[in-house]
Structure formats: structure tokens, C-alpha cells
Image (cartoon, rainbow, N blue to C red; front, side):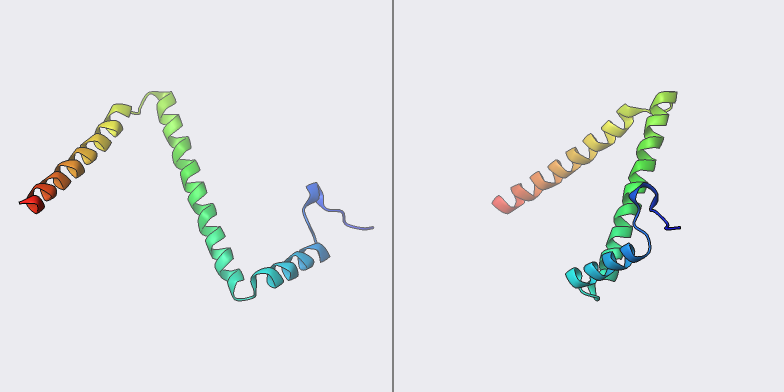
Length: 93
């Protein structure tokens, strides 16, 4: 009996061929770097997904204060603008 891939997932010899092609394309030295960066990207995606799901759940339950988040962003922008304006005045004198 021959094992057929479930949902088109490559198995056995197909995986070996894919790995050989990857080594030929990227070189043996870059594959660990690519795997590491791919893992980090997946981790960041999962973290963002979890955070977004938590924020949506907070909004649905009415626990979130959206105006407070917007107010913090405006405060930091105002601070940056005022500090850069002071630098411009001192340099023009």
C-alpha cells in the first residue's frame, strides 16, 4: 500500500527533493538564517494576532477605553513637535 499525502502535504521523497532544491537555491549557509527569520516572523504574526484578538474581545465586552489610547498618541506627537520647534529657534539665533 502506498502512503498518499493528506491534503497535498509532501511526504518522504518529496520533502527530500524540496530540501535539495532549497540548498541549491540559497546555499547551505543561508538556510539556518532563513529558518530563523521565518520563525521570528511567524512568532511576531502570532503575537500580533493574539493582541488583536484580545483587543477585539475587550471592545466586544466594553472594557476598552479607545479615547485613552488615542489621547496617549496625541500627547506624544505634541511633545515631539514642541521639542523640535525649540531646537529650530535656538539654531536660527
